[in-house]
Each structure stands twice: as C-alpha cells, then as structure tokens.
Image (cartoon, rainbow, N blue to C red; front, side, top):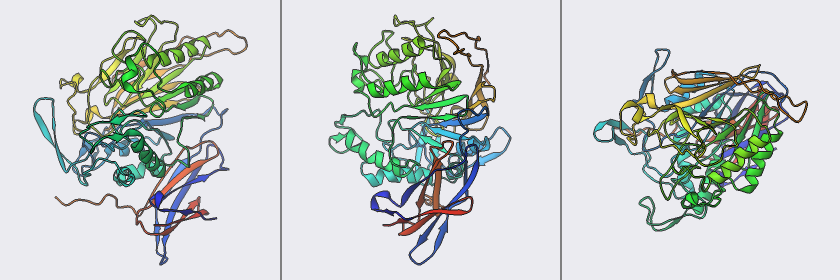
Amino acid sequence: DSTDVNANTDFTHTFLVDGLSSRTKYSYQVQCIVADGTALDSMEGSFTTAPGGDDEVEVSFVWAADLAGQGYGRNPNFSVTNANGETVTGGYIVFDTMEALSPDFALFQGDLIYADGAIPAAINYTNGTEVLGTWVNNPSKDFVAVTLDEFRANWKYNHGDDKMQSFLAKTPIFVQWDDHEVTNNWYPTEVLVNSPLYEGNVSADELYNRSLQALIEFNPIESEFTYRSQRFGKHLEIFFPDFRSYRDPNPDNSNPTLTDMMGPEQVAWLKDGLKSSSATWKIISAHDPLGVVTGSEGDYDSFGNEDPAILGRELELQELLAFINDNGIENVVSLTSDVHFTAHVNLSPDRAEGGFTDFKPLDEFVIGPIHAGSFGPNYMDTSFGAQYEYEMGPLSLGYERWANLAPEVNELQSFGHASVSETGELHVKLIGIDGSVMYEKLMTPIIVDNSDSSSSTVASDSTESTGSLELPITTSDVFIQSGEVSDSSINIMARCNNEAGSTMKLWLDGAEMDSTDVNA
C-alpha cells in the first residue's frame, strides 16, 4: 500500500493506525528511503492507547501553550536548575520537564508557533523600565509568515528542538490553535490595514488558509481540523472547542447583542456533549479563558470585556452556563492558557455582577507561557463573578504588569498537569518549567444519582497549596510525533528532513505497517 504525497505536503505524512487494543503501549518508528536506497531512521517513538469508557483507571496529562513568542526562541545557553537539583541547558527546557512526568497525553492549546513574530539573533528584555539582560536565539528566524512555506518554516523551527522532538516521540498530543498560528488576535473576514507587520492590506482569511494547511501537515492530524472530544476511561472526557475559526469580529465584543465565539452549531455540539457524557469529569480545553480579559477596548479577544454587564460573546457563555445549570451537569472544569501568566480563576454566582446568577461555580486553571514573554496578571471581567484564587505574573513579583519578561525569569513560565484517580478525584497542578509545583488543587467530584430525574450530591471537597555561528534548524533525519489517540487508534505524523524524494515506511511494534512515497 503506497500513497503519493505531492510537493504541497513538504515531505510530511500522517498515518492513521486503527484496530489497536485499549490501554496498550506500542512502539513505532518511521524510515525514509531515498532513491539511491539510503535509509534514514527516526528515533523510536511510543504511545499508549486510551482506556475504554468503562475502565476505572488513573489517567494523567499535561497542557501547554505559548511557545517561542515575543522573540524568545531557541537559546543554546538557556539554563535551568530543576526541582531535582539537575541543571538542564539549551532550547525548550519545558519539554524535558514535562517528559519526566510521563503523561499519557498532552493538550497543545495553541500559539505553538508565532507566525507573526520574528526571532532575532538577540533581544533585550526589561522589567518595564530598564534592561535586565539579553536573550540569544540560535538558530534565529528573521521573518513574519505570509507564504505557505513561511508558515511551514515556523513549525520546522520549533520541531527542530531536540527536547521537543523527544517529548513528542513519547507523548500523543491533541492540537488546538489560537491566534499566533495566523496573526495576533485575528478573526474571520478581518483585513489587516496598514499593519507594521505586512506590506499593504492583508486578508486574515488568506493567512488563515495557508496557516491551516501548514498546521495539518506538521501535526498528527489526518485530514480535518475541527472541534471534537475524546473519552479516557470512566472518569474523564475532554472537549476541544475552536474559539478562533467561527468567531464574530473582535470589535463587536462589547455590543449588547450576541457576538459569536463558537457559533450556534458548535455551541449545540458542546451542550449535547456535556449533557450526554457519562464521564465523571467534563474538561473543556479552552484555548482562550472564560473569565480573564484578553485584548483591549475595540479588540477584546476572548469572552470578557472589562464591563460587569453581560455583553457580546458573554451572551454565548451565559447560554452555556445556564444549560449546564438547568441540566444538572456536574464537574465541569476549564483548562486554559493564552494570557502568559499562571492562575486559578473561579467563576461564582455569589459574586456575579452581570445580573445573571443561575449557574454553577466553575473553576478555570490558567498556564503559560511554556517558553515566551510573560505578562500580567490581566484584568478580570466580573460579569460571572470571576476572581483570582491564585495568580503569578510579572506584577506578582514586583515588575511592570506588561513587562514581557524573557524565559530567563523562569519562575513565570509554566505548564499544567492533571490526573484523575481510579476513584475519580481530579488533581490539578500548575508547574514551573523547573518542575516545581506553583499551585495545586485536589477536587472530589460531585456524585450525581441518575436513578431519578433529581440529583443528589455529595459536597465537593478540595485542598490547595501555593506551592556567533548559526546552528541548524534540526539535527534529526526523520521527525516523528503521534496524536489524537483513542482506545483503538492513533495518528502518527512524520517528516523526511533530508527534503529528498523518499519512500516513507512505518513500523509498529517491529512490524511494517504502510509505505508512502514522499516526493519533491
């Protein structure tokens, strides 16, 4: 079985492997064979399929976002002493830290490239008023992406990091996107007029189409990229909405009338999924936050808009919160990122200032950046009673709120780790890139008795604590990663980095599975 992959794939291919057994570890390897018979091998990868929907087993995962932003790319001199006392040096150190936790899978919540930002050879970083130091990027990236090849080059830049490649070879991922895969705070139909980043007027939709093709090529996505959900055993289902592709314009987000974030079809999908899910925990992988304000007047980019009244996209969020309440859906949690600081946010009807209180309290955990400039904490929108239970950003350490501190100030770089026990407890940790736990919360689920139409509950209990020479883009011959893992299938993506016409072969547990002709 072979498939011709033309020039538009940039030597990439994603294999769909199905018919697998649940809760089973598999190994895999990809080989690229060029015309003269030379064979180039990837490192050995591995993944474990998801448990079945009735399996009462522990599941753990990480979530991450915001990589190589604000000009902070791959610095070979960047060094962090981790929580074990070991010094880790060079590149994207966060992936070394996440890999050490051996998560079952990872959520990549977007801004995994910054197509709209160059990565210069050196950049000064400040505390908001004075220079604190100089960050060095080697290799560097000297362009803003406009063409398809430039969007592809952003993925190649990040995938060239050895620590990232090692993590991806061992950890299945679920990919979402946000704005910087295209351009800052973009929305459909937007025309970028007189932007300092681009020549002339540029259609965001044209950038979107090129970015989407590159995203599908360079991630383990077989064909369609859309909102979806995945079950992991008895206690966990994760929902992956798309807050970017279906939204109304950002300037409309302060209107008194509905402004779409997800759009009616996606809202209906999410409602139906939450209501029909029998999983103990229903986690929304929200790549834009529900309670934290992002953007500013005229360009509010998420739901909030710094007005206690319920406006714009908040009307869509109100509809969702009311549905959850009216249908007795318990144990809904939001995991989010995007804002470049770390926080635990709680939405509560007891504090809501928007005149709507018929909703259940909701916890939202905020991470990032994993390797980018740090900001905040941001302002809060109080329409649904959002408040910080924990916050850590430049302002928390005495810097200016919008200081754009380099990853060198590593106590402001973070990712998330969540685990669900065999008995259904959810343990969320916000972790620094050195592996230290910044904040954690252990949550016992509210148990719903479905024997009749009413629900009896056990009170939720929780504990928390605060705890010179330009280097090559990549040194690997063949890049590999896996994703979209289920209890019976996996997507495996690979690239022949020799960029020569090759035959791509996949082995699973030592058996050849498929071959694909990859041509220039």
